[in-house]
Image 1 (cartoon, helix red, strand yellow):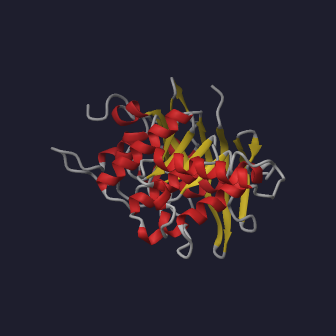
Image 2 (cartoon, rainbow, N blue to C red):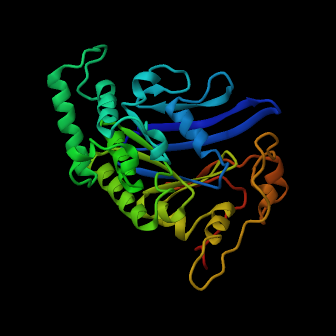
Image 3 (cartoon, rainbow, N blue to C red):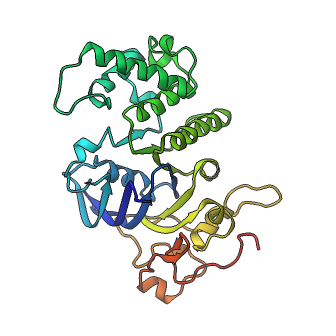
Length: 332
């Protein structure tokens, strides 16, 4: 099945006052229709920057691209060729903090219908006039989508202001907003971080059900491996801007091959076992280590890890970039 999103060997960074920050260094990932791919890693690993590159929203004045490509629904998001038409239609975004994404001065309905005026799938390209017939059809679609995300009395909800909704309700509205343009890809940037555990589970269930039913691809960025287990089909592990491992969910949690992935999983609390932290710190993108960026913290590192970048390889959809991959089950 053809990919909706293909990121190939992407390396980019930012010009800063203290030098060039090399944030992404040869990142690779793909997402297929109806598939939910998790993007995990420690804070500062480049997840948010990668999402910005895919959306085509990185600030051009300070961003430099060394090599690589981002292809989304046939558009080159780095070159800007068709990016404006794709963004907000073929690809949409669910933010981490929905409250910050709403204007507190306007009712929910006003903001939703403003989105539909410009991003509705019923809008004809180049046409600015918002006819009464299309407005009614768009409102019907909004009501149906709010019901699909399990929000009761959606017509009454549209009359409310953002502060009158709970965190879970606001995030459900955001999921609805992301799906209303009938996108081919949704990027969800840690969408359950600000919610309590019970509401998190409900939101993840809604997002997975709608993605599968509608054949929408989802790139789910998170630092919560529990959430990744609940919702993802495949998981991509990033470390300091590099792709460390790509694996189906079951293999990721039971038989990871990259030492960083194993240490990441062993750092999680688990009944009968004390979590073990990863020694050292994530390197600065201003002065990253050469070759494999994880080698200063890796217990299996040798000279080749310091001098030669490992190639992403493997078999049966389980890929890893390591000169000395782990063998066997995680707890074996």
